Length: 195
Image (cartoon, rainbow, N blue to C red; front, top):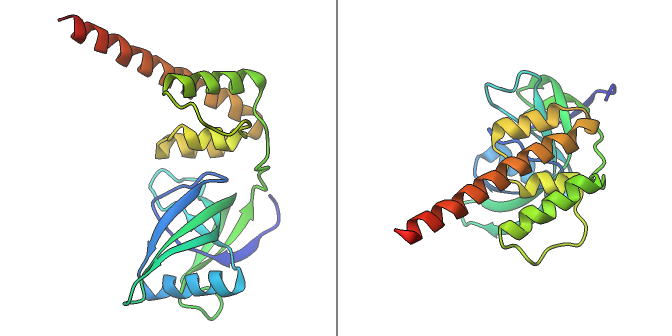
């Protein structure tokens, strides 16, 4: 994470997790230019997490996955995929000679294929079963599990700030909490049914 790289930047109040697919609606001229560069030159770009809790200047490295719809006025609905996480050092109003911003960043170089511990994996399967999700991939990576848990912005931020060896424990705690909520919900349905 030591080398600094200058990349195109798109500040937004979202924090995509590695491997996550994110829909975006592109309408500003500068980001339409960024989309054109991403489409024609396979340019990756950063989504800087523009939020008051982001004290360490985290962001997500994104790559264009697909264009869903193009509008007559030049707007587009797209899907982008998170490939890495970074810390931003310096934000510039423009990237090289482009209209869109750029930034100096240091990548975390996450392993998108990192497998969870057996304990986390088994508890996650129990979680899926409790949510009546029966059709799924046979193998989940740590980041796929994190994406499936619908973590809020605070939890996403905490998760990405943790050292990699602490990710499993963080996700175990979140799954246990979600299972507790699901169990409480089931019990309350039984109580109301009896009345």
